[in-house]
Image 1 (cartoon, rainbow, N blue to C red):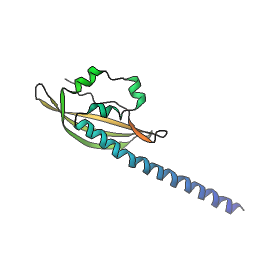
Image 2 (cartoon, rainbow, N blue to C red):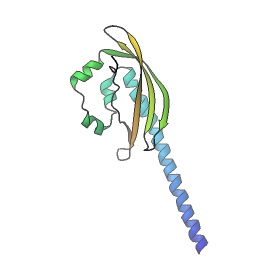
Image 3 (cartoon, rainbow, N blue to C red):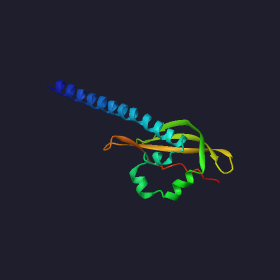
Image 4 (tube, rainbow, N blue to C red):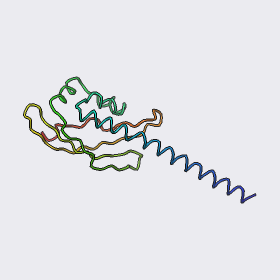
Length: 140
């Protein structure tokens, strides 16, 4: 009887681990399309669409005004490059991004670094960007 109990316990643990691994793969499978959509929106200067991929909790604490969105119209993104990606201990995923930004008024281009951090929302079954839009004026 003890042997059967141990086998059932081990089988149950293996099933839980397999389910968790499948869940993790499913989550990771949904991350890349979200990151691709965000990168495309930023590259095309569609910051309002990019804003829709930001975590609602972040947006509630840091609302964007019409003036702030207008400010993004003063720049053009000429490059968006993923430098590295890593997982955090809390289940978030961080990506280091290099942006090439052109000021439309001076036509001066500069390169800057930006860190994206993404979190999985189990209720919505989707990923959210938890750091907001890049501050393209940092250091200007």
